[in-house]
Amino acid sequence: MRIRPDSTEYATATVTADHDITGKGIEVALPVSGEAPATWTAADVLSVVQSLPGRWTATYRVLVGPVGGAFTLEAPKHYDWTVRITDTPEVPVFRAGHIHVTN
Image 1 (tube, rainbow, N blue to C red):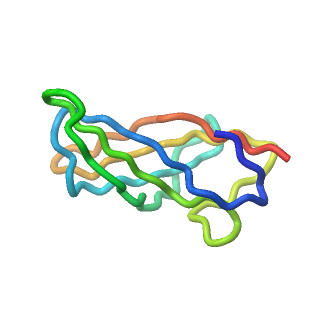
Image 2: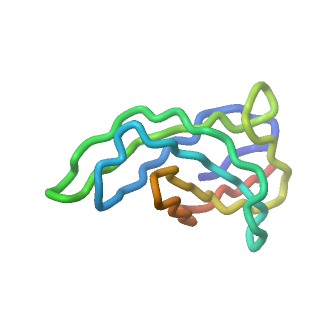
């Protein structure tokens, strides 16, 4: 995803698991590329569907930007889209992509 630092918009993504993740918490962190995640925010889970036998895909979103967004991003920087699923006893963390902030 590419975004300007003065833009506020939803970033939508998917995550797939090998078990039913319906009702599980999905959180997102956007650390500067190469740094460890420090700040997590709950994502809005839009849907969870069984995509294949034994595979569930959740579609979720987070508002990013300076006007009410969960994260305010600076240019010119790259951020690692990081997602974690709060499940018991597992709490997997995935690097799921990048956000490029440009002027």
